[in-house]
Image (cartoon, rainbow, N blue to C red; front, top):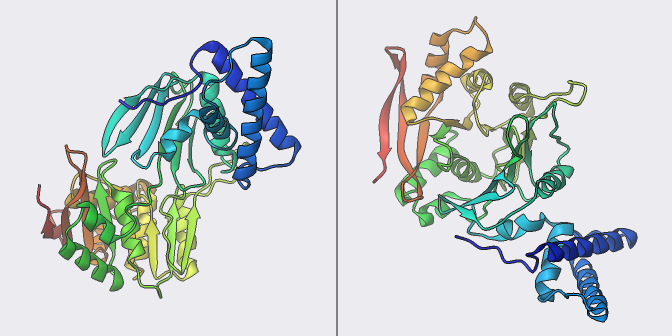
Length: 389
């Protein structure tokens, strides 16, 4: 179990820490210093305030802060980072952080979850969420009890609040830079070299590729690596609920949806974004995750000859095609299921199915390819690759 060290443990020490945080924050604000853009100056201010606090405490016979360096780090995390969570967010081994209750904080490492020895307060959790949402332009309140947002480093934030939940429930899926390309996935053991070459050639040839799998199976990581393999001359348009892909290619436009404002207007849906993306001359249309009626717009786009890529939750490659054939029916009663199936059979080239193993490792389990026909109301496929278990 991970233990998060802190110079603040008992109640008096907590009060001392909050005093230091307030002093440093007031001084930075008064001197017009942004701790994010001037971290060295902020560090000197924090160190100065910690020393000043200890000098005052010793003169009055109060308990000083024992570990000044740790206190400075904690104060800086509170004023410029995400407070008690910053150490977890900075840890390269942590893939995800979630809070079920103030005294129940968990992380995922290597695909496995563990509880950490970190106890927060309700006020701290609310303050952390407010700080995370500050730069995103999104909100969470009684009228909008759920929110999805992207943090400045690309990590994905999801929050649910009471009375939908008993406590504020927070999930932070970190933006990991380690596995950015197909070659990275080969090194990591998620993909075999020959299979990576085949996928790279498929992307270069403008093939449409769907990535499927369960939650945490590595779908977004695989999609990101596929898009990164696009030729430099390709113009990529990505569509997501919240920015998460963050692919570094020369010609790319990233679009994200928008929730309704306080007055209930201003919402921008994925369906609208897919339609707008087609007006932006894409060489490849990428939908971060297909889960609703936007599947119809994606299928229509693919049927016009625009290469695509997307992720979908499914238990196998064939199941992913069945789901993609069913989701467009959510768009209205006049949708012809037969047309959708035939369109998928002719426009989807590969389905890459990812799995999270019991050992916590993510790997490509299979790759299937539609053969262009529909039998018994299902898209017929052939297996291109079967991973070793």
